[in-house]
Image (cartoon, rainbow, N blue to C red):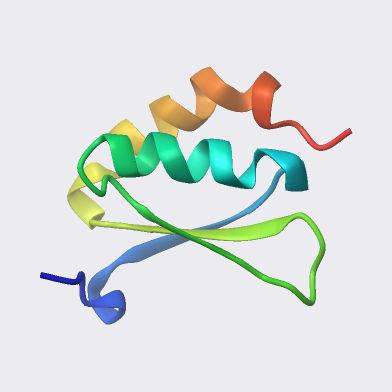
Length: 72
């Protein structure tokens, strides 16, 4: 079942464009922990959508990956 994107929280992030698939793979590896999409018109900006109940875990994950995802 696909998540209803209207009921999900979202974060706009700026990450290294080369790390998009890396982060997407991690999120999918956690059984669709979040949905990651790119914003082609804004280089390096991605949208991470997730269930509101997972906000704490999402922020912890992003914190632990911040150096790897950093846009240089």
